[in-house]
Image (cartoon, rainbow over all chains, first blue to last red; front, top):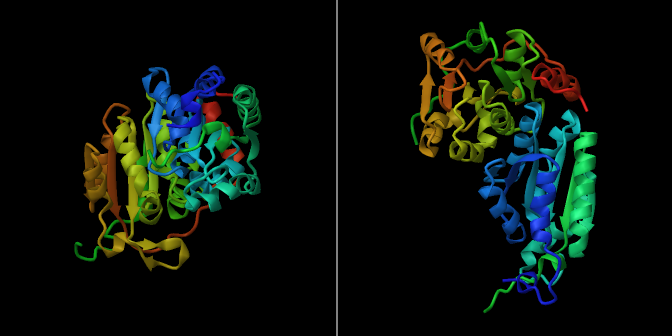
Length: 180
Length: 198
């Protein structure tokens, strides 16, 4: 349960927007290591017969997968948590050298009101690490920003053979409740 | 742990040439290092995608390609060290179970590119048994050319997911280098499938 789940002020449904914008962008493959912030998009992806929803053991598998799907002519996106960005670093060379569209949607941990400090080192380094590896980044903290920023990132990924990441801030996702 | 089983009797170049003979519509992805050279030595082809980095990714590139091109047979040719770095991908691939994907691991039991250090495969880890445990419907350890011919006969797009470890001699064949420009390799590959550059 998170703040956003409680929806105290009838906030914009950004979780559905993630899936809706990916689908409208022509994405046929959604590859992921789960995160609570992606739960809605993953549920919608798994339920959609026109989408290949692919669960990974580690996030860098998604970079290889999406390179292969693009070689075969199809678009996809990688959904992951900030910790998984660390797992991807060396494999991002594949995108830099082969230049295929790599669209990533990253939920942040270690960003705001984090209970588990073990998330902080990678969470704090996530955006800088992506940029160091040549990935363009945008950050959403307002629910209404998610759809337009994801549309923009998808447009630049698929029209530029570029690596583009939308980072979803932890305030947007909500505070994880550890003690009930 | 099984007995030490470092490589085997087969010549890697002869194995790859046999697998790719009369290849027709076969799509091929190669793992970095010697497997890329072996596939190049068998003849460059628009339907080849050679990896030069992203160690551990050959099988996942093959998976994405197989899912996007379900009517084409996809063959991943990689080495034991490269496959070991992407071991989790065997679980991911088994869950998807694409019937058009075959992984051929040229297993010399060593990290050949870096000075022939003994690999996990060379110390007893059997990649085909790991794939079988994950649920691959067909796996084999191959030590004879007749079995390579049998594998080649099974490469059709509806013949089922497969992984074979092919035990090859631990020696570096002369390097036959494929192009290193990833974009240059990508565009003819996509165009051969009917997809224009952006």
